Image (tube, rainbow, N blue to C red; front, side):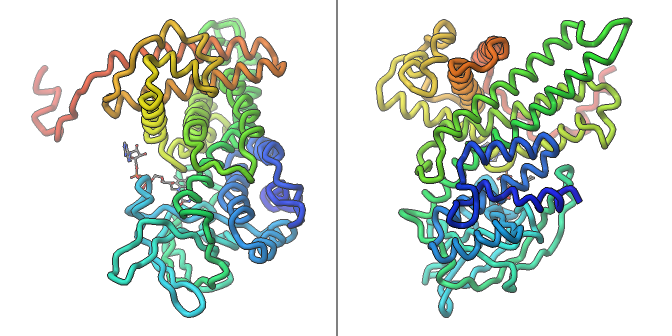
Length: 457
Ligand SMILES: Cc1cc2nc3c(=O)[nH]c(=O)nc-3n(C[C@H](O)[C@H](O)[C@H](O)COP(=O)(O)OP(=O)(O)OC[C@H]3O[C@@H](n4cnc5c(N)ncnc54)[C@H](O)[C@@H]3O)c2cc1C
């Protein structure tokens, strides 16, 4: 019902170029629409984000003019919807080894395989589908191919709809694929399909702050309203120091996200090739989704028992924001990849300390002044994976700090900027201590019956 009313306003036009009947696809306007949606409903905003970043933008950029015009006009005028199918039951994080395959057949391609967890399963009018080419010897080529499938054509069967934990508005499931796609609907990448995929995924990750922005603003508004009106022990919750700490953190995540929106608006136009922009894309996606989850958890704590009602924003937000830390790159993996990229760059340029890297890099040079004392150490280049993850998160926070400083320079509210820099600096110090303290413990292989505490009483 909500969705039908919203879609009648044809909001997806912000993603669409003027020649296809949209408003021009300006990134700041796309983020602003995602923000307005997520203030009301995070799943609604995710639905917009899927259509925009995972279908409309890549089709605008990479499909032939004829195919793009035909399809995008339907998005602008007829409320058509589209999604992206990459993930398979056996291949999620390891998507490059996907088994869905394609081969020439007639005047196009036969594509066969199984995909699951694609947002808008069973709903989308169009799918951007990924597969690997079957070679003559039966093995699959390394590169990834992209195709556009029109759901009016047969061959895409939903075998099962999943019972999602949250994001109720969005259908997910498992699709059996056996389709024929005409030659015109295969996307010809400018170089490799993997580079196309990186450009698309990095652009999408850079736009996560649009979905996060309204969500964090709503939590900041509702949490503040709650703590200023709820009395406990004869005074308002707002007067308790621990409560203030939680509110300051929520507001800091709001401010950090605003800084990211400013950054993305100025650095990620659809025309730019973002395939090598891995560090800011991975940092923004993983940091902002951790902030969404942390803000929701804090709001739930502050809301008390009422927050646990199914219809309360705090509990809903906790569940709905959780998968953002998993999809489009699991945060654990993205943090590790940030560290790997930074270590590679440091090795190449022979920089002696972490501080010297932060200072010399435009993504962190301004933040480095706040972090000199704690980062002036030479980097161990053979960190364990768990340490790489901690360091990657720390680097993500340093990049965020830089964006917050730049937002402050543009005149954003100074107390929010000041508090946010304090919070981010303190968290960075905590992460650096954790880096030091982390040891190479190994899990036990099994927890058996003999490991029952009762036997030791
Ligand atoms: C709500 C939701 C929406 C989604 N939407 C889409 C969509 O629209 N289109 C689509 O194609 N897919 C979508 N997905 C799928 C999503 O992208 C995958 O779930 C994700 O890539 C992880 O893959 P997986 O589930 O197979 O987990 P796995 O690959 O099995 O990974 C599970 C966990 O194992 C750990 N792990 C994995 N590899 C490593 C490693 N190398 N090092 C350390 N730890 C590791 C991480 O903690 C990771 O989170 C969606 C998923 C969800 C939950």
